[in-house]
Length: 273
Image (tube, rainbow, N blue to C red):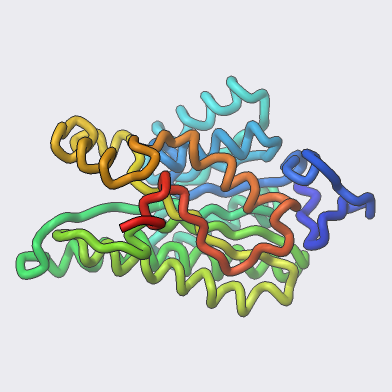
């Protein structure tokens, strides 16, 4: 059973955490949506390595179970699996209820599930727009609303939603995607306003261009990869491991007074023109 985060950097027994102990997630549970592969998989792995009991979520049970098994084998940490549709309110309610029955309300919720659709705006299909909004934005609302109920009762929790450099910057052919990721920033601020009085912090982590299974075609495109390297001050694609430290920080007692913020992990892309 999770011990629960404390909003002041204290352990449940009342002993102050200091130094690296501030980043220790031992005894806490973390639900990471869309964590069977890609960025979500790396984030779940990183939280487990920091001590958390991780719930790997997805719609593909075989993929989620494989990821959970690999995380458990490599970290020695207890892992669990949750399978439900993040875009359906009833499914979210039932899925979170199942997690709570096994582990209690998660101490950490990571809203990572997301998709991409590309097309010039004059040709963008209604279906693709609705899919993007449902998966990238509505899911974060539904999960946050449901998990917040238990966090409020407990008086503590961490919610981290995954944004993007497109939360701030636009590119051709992905205007709807950019709209959903921009909305994540304001949803984060709004949730902060509602939940901070209950000892809950809500922040967003916004990656730049990262090499994953879903971006492999872009990575393999020599012209596009050259553009990424030129446009990013760090001169390279991000590696998913680059995101872990920021997530662990935002999930830990070290970030007890960080709330409503979006942290860009993008190699400097949003800092320059």
